[in-house]
Length: 522
Image (cartoon, rainbow, N blue to C red; front, side, top):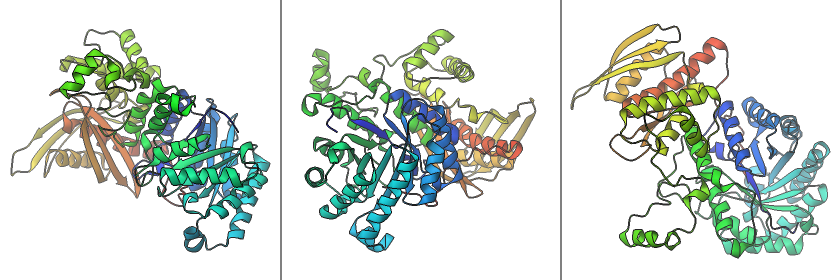
């Protein structure tokens, strides 16, 4: 398909979620799906429905929202997987079934224990079944970059003949390099009949740090769909980063003469949203969306920037959705100004979320000298309705001294106004606070990971805390923000406790929608 349009296939909700610690609740997945639709990606791979009932429910819910992009689900080459994908995605106006099977010699011998002919037969049968259920069918030969070129061409030819409308070439383990990958795509163009009648796709992992470079090499060699994730999250070292590959094509348009349909001004808020939900914070030096991406400290750079921005900036902050003025609003700012600022930052809040965020903003503005975009973002990321009661932290007092146990005294209040006062000790202030929360709630959590970072610069900056815990074998993640880092940690821990208590009392299933059983990668 000769075209200058590059389809962006976002797999944040499938491959990205498979990164350790990145499992999301149904509400979180729906929130990201909406952000991806607003970003105007072409395809959303919403999950792997056969992985768990939660995955199936999430894909189905996303499909039924019908926000514009094609909704896709992943399936192995078996009847049950394919039928589950179809049942999950059919509610979308535009939907796709994505089937895969491994093709490399190492996978044939050690994982599948199947001959070449058996694999082709399996692929053809799966594509034919998917095609009978859905007009839009994608096929991926897993570990294609380590598959013999001649055999890969055979598999791709059979897939096209069976009815695949998109054929994806994955670098599953991040092994290839740009020149080699370019050769692979050119080989397929020369040796596969009908390849110009389908969309050729690319899916790269970042094990050697070349996922974006390899994806661009594939595009230069004829690929017209890029599979990628927000912030490059994914298994092991991650996937091709959506924001990097999109801005590479946009910034170097004179070289590629290609375009995507992505609204680049939504990149930064979407990246922040995904980072907040998954707990995978964006490195400061991350290309495009990192804090340092548009920071210029060296004197000679600053001098050049003052003369003309293009001396050291190849794109503008505004082009990816970063405000030119970072210093925002104040304690006298009204709700209308706050709403506009939230919208400018790329967030779309329900009225109840906006009201809660505005209340938190006013509280913080009374304490902080300067308010920044990062402060507003931190507030927004912590006003999700899933963090509401039954318990709210009313007060926290910590006593800590070198060489002595720390003491935490906290007061919780429930929705009826009842107060619960508890005191406890720990090796440090955070451990003391956590132990008191466990004692007060009766929910015994196992802490797996605790992260803390600053939302903005300055001594009065908010601290954003992320905790990953385990309860009854199920992982949970909570977040909190406060100028007091121990309070931020408490809020994060309490968010998880509240979620578990709500499930217990109301029968709600708000656990992460995926598990690690039968997870698939391409």
